[in-house]
Image (cartoon, rainbow, N blue to C red):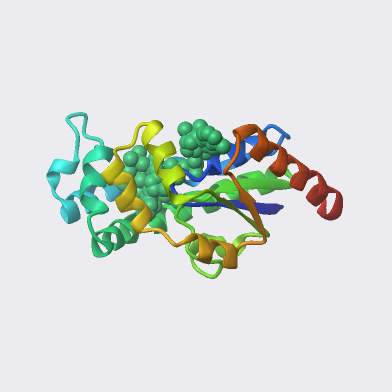
Length: 200
Ligand SMILES: CC(C)(COP(=O)(O)OP(=O)(O)OC[C@H]1O[C@@H](n2cnc3c(N)ncnc32)[C@H](O)[C@@H]1O)[C@@H](O)C(=O)NCCC(=O)NCCS
Ligand SMILES: Nc1ncnc2c1ncn2[C@@H]1O[C@H](COP(=O)(O)OP(=O)(O)OP(=O)(O)O)[C@@H](O)[C@H]1O
C-alpha cells in the first residue's frame, strides 16, 4: 500500500490538498485527528496533567485543547515535552490504522502530517511519497486566524515547526497554494492521475 504523505506548515492548505485526493476515492488518515483521539487515553491525560498542570483538564475530565496549547507552544522545550508524551501514542494509533487498511487491500492511503520534521524520524520513514503544500507565511497566518485560531497562538505554533526550505528539501513534490483552493485541487488531482498511472 502506497503511503502518500501531505505535509506543510500551519494554514498552508494540507487539508484542502488531502480533500482533493479523497475526492478521487483515496482513504486518509488525519494525524491531527489521531492526536485528538490519543488525548482521550487515560495514560496520556495523566502524563499531560503531571507535566503541564491539572488546569489543562476541562470540567468534563477531558483535555482542554486550548488550555494545553497555551502552555505547550510557549517555548521549544515545552513543545518537546508535549511531543514526547503524544508522538509515540500517535505513532501507535497510526500503525494500527495502516494495518487495517493493508488488510482491506487498499492500494494507497493519504496521510496528513502537520508536525513532519524529516523523512528519517518517526512515522514519516514509511512514506512512499511526500507532497509539500506551501504558501507565503503571512497568507498562512491570515488563513489560520480566519479559520478560528488566535494570531499569537498561530505564530507560536509556526515557530515550533520546520521551515518551507526544509520541507522542500524533504519532499518529492511541491504544491504552491498561493492562488485559489480550486487551483490547488487541480494541481493535486493532476499529480495523482500521473502518479496512479506510473505506480499503481
Ligand atoms: C496542543 C493541542 C491540544 C492543540 O489542539 P488544537 O485543536 O488547538 O489544534 P490541532 O490539534 O487541530 O492542530 C492544529 C495545528 O497546530 C499545529 N500543531 C499541533 N501540534 C503541534 C506540535 N506538536 N508542534 C507544532 N505544531 C503543532 C499544526 O499545524 C496543526 O495542524 C494538539 O495540537 C495536540 O495535542 N498536539 C500534540 C500532538 C501532535 O503533535 N499533533 C499533530 C499530529 S501530526
Ligand atoms: N487557496 C486558498 N485560498 C483561500 N483560503 C484557503 C486556501 N487554501 C486554504 N484555505 C483556507 O485556509 C485555512 C487553512 O487551510 P487548511 O485547513 O487546508 O490548512 P492546513 O495546512 O491543513 O492547516 P492546519 O495545519 O491548521 O491543519 C482553511 O480555512 C482553508 O479553507
